[in-house]
Length: 164
Image 1 (cartoon, rainbow, N blue to C red):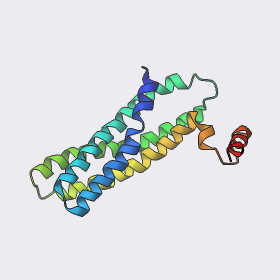
Image 2 (tube, rainbow, N blue to C red):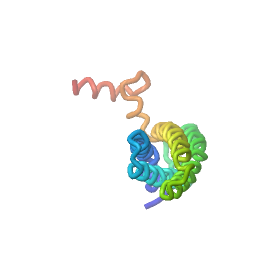
Image 3 (cartoon, one colour):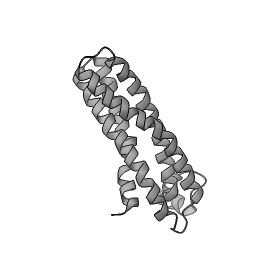
Image 4 (cartoon, one colour):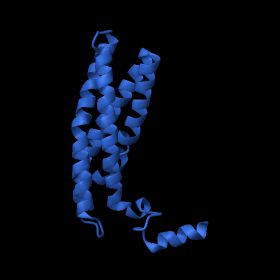
């Protein structure tokens, strides 16, 4: 297994996992259920760490992928820039998750404020990592992303019409 494999395995964690963690955390906040808040906080902690792993593995994956014919260095650069924009929010989410777990377990007066900040930071992480993932998909999945648009290859449209 090389860095490209690790990157492909881990890059969905911050996108799908953060969305799920946000849903659980919001549910816990609205239901005023401390246990659900803690589960959401743990999910966000794990998924934010997964985002950092995906980002770190992307550096080495870039070296492997840019050697493949047909891979756009511009697409790689845009993907990398988008991922770098998400990283500060991932780190903030990690810190807020850890603080939230600590404070919620001790019923500290700042626990609810940290939980709300975690919700905001993780929402930004989720949005930014989703954009990075979409741009990353354009590196090797251009035909699937553009299927049904005017920029897709004619063969794709012909295959779609045959299925209809």
